[in-house]
Every structure is written in C-alpha cells, then in structure tokens.
Amino acid sequence: MSMRTPIDLSVDRCPDGYLKNRDDWSEELAYKMASEWNGLVFKDEHFSVLNFIRDYHEEHQVTPDVREATHFLIANGMDKKEAKKYLFKLFPNGYMQQGIQLAGMRRPTAWCVG
Image (cartoon, rainbow, N blue to C red; front, side):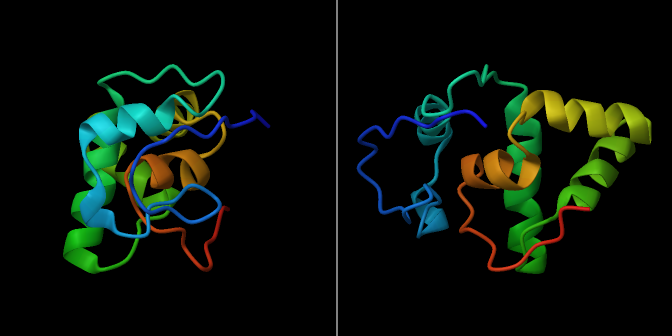
C-alpha cells in the first residue's frame, strides 16, 4: 500500500483524508489530494470517472460502487475486462479508496469491494 503524505489543503477532512463536505471539492483540490498518494500519476483522464462519481451521487444520493463505475465505462465503449483494468490503472490503491476520496465523497460507512 502506498504511503500518503498529508499536505495543507485548507478543507475539513476526516482522519482518512475524505472530505467532510462534498461541496468543498474542485478539480484543483482533486489534483492537490492526488499529490498525497505516492506513485499515483494523476491526469485529466481521471476526471471522467470522478465526475461520474459526483453525478451519480447527486442523482441517487449514494456513492457508486465499483460495479456502477464499471457499467459507466462499459456504456462509454469499454468491455467489462478492459473497464476493470482501467479503473485499477487510474486508482492503483483501489477505486473505493482513491477514486471515491479524490471525487470528494465522504468515506462510505459500509461498502462492497467485490
């Protein structure tokens, strides 16, 4: 597991680094949060998934799990195997840990990682 180096982001976050208020999120903040993850190469292509997470939450009032993210990528032209590999490439420490955090979501109290 990659170590995180906390940086001053001037936003209220829980001890695990998740935002307490999703309205504090911005693309600039996502870049700053990504810099805490050693080994994460954060690029503009991440925002397709991050914006999906935020839009899904806005519509359904629940954070999308990896299955919903995979379905989003499939709907945008990837096959299932390719979509899962792509998510792991974007978020090598895991969609639920890195993806959800970088999208500015609060830490889910319970989630399925299967």
